[in-house]
Length: 390
Picture (tube, rainbow, N blue to C red):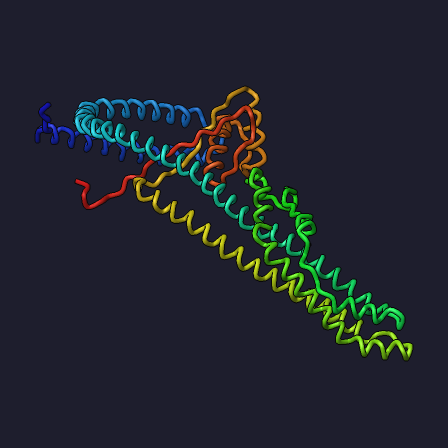
């Protein structure tokens, strides 16, 4: 369609119409000022003549306004037609934008939902990795503490025998201390059990319930071969030490004295056990921290690799609320009255309240938990200017 340009004659005519309208405006403004002054002087109650004069003025003003509108309409209508030529083509361009924008929005929605689901899986994977690491360390600690308790108990029995010795049986006790010590028995080792199944104590256990028994088994796996000789060595060394104290203890018994070495040895033994426990816990905590750090890095590397295959299109998220049942409107009303600081007036509609709830979901993430409402996330891909854009 060929655009019809406005002719000079049309522009001149339009200028004359505008000039005439301006002269009317000036005249009516002058007359209005006079009438206002008269009305102000008379007060609220106008005289018959003044009221009649204002009425005639307003009637004339309406007629002049209509005449001005009629006079300019042919020109402004032509301008609207010309504007329509441009907007029609612009709308065609916008229609092209909308179709492709819709495809990008749908793509961003799919990627965003997939990302959220993958994030959930990544978090579960990380939680499970942390669970395996922390629960294995806990199971090992339980076995280690149970073994330490057995070792401490057996040493305590030797110390009590030393402390309670008499002149009549001290020679027999001396022979006991000289005797060979057997390694820890397999039956005793098998009686040690780790338990990490209590969800209150170990919340992460719920993420790998089918692995807990295996973790407890692995916590003992291959350790008996080291623990058995360790037990034998520890008890033998302790017995040898007590054996070295026999002459001193025999002399104390002959003088009727209690064992001075026994109490000192008990304190040393308790202090050594506490130090060993503390060092063991510190090593365990550092080991767990290192292993969890490695697991976190593995997950982040996987996320980075996935990100390379996703289009770089940011998404603006908003929410639309679908009211499933009539009771849903009541939920929206209660939410508005408790979360919005604006007063409810006659202009406050239910749709206004719904729009507020939708905006609040985007702003703060607060949603109405109701079976009568459904929140539908909406996504929009942002368009950025690039060097390649035409």
